Image 1: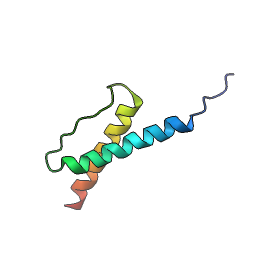
Image 2: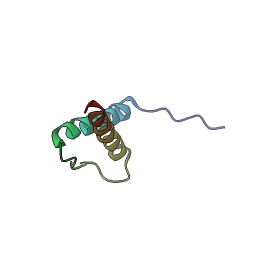
Image 3: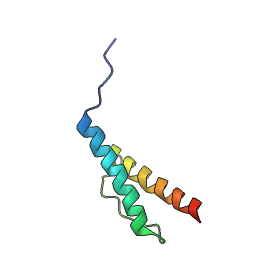
Length: 64
């Protein structure tokens, strides 16, 4: 049986940074809700950015 893949710390850090950038962009995009995702579609970084953006958007709605 093959060994499971080990995530590289640099990859995890880059993904976390993309998530944080998405959150920050959401705060700047308020109240219009539009921001440009700088990562290519279909990549993990694109998804991480989008998750950060969407999470911040949901949280902003809960505060109102």
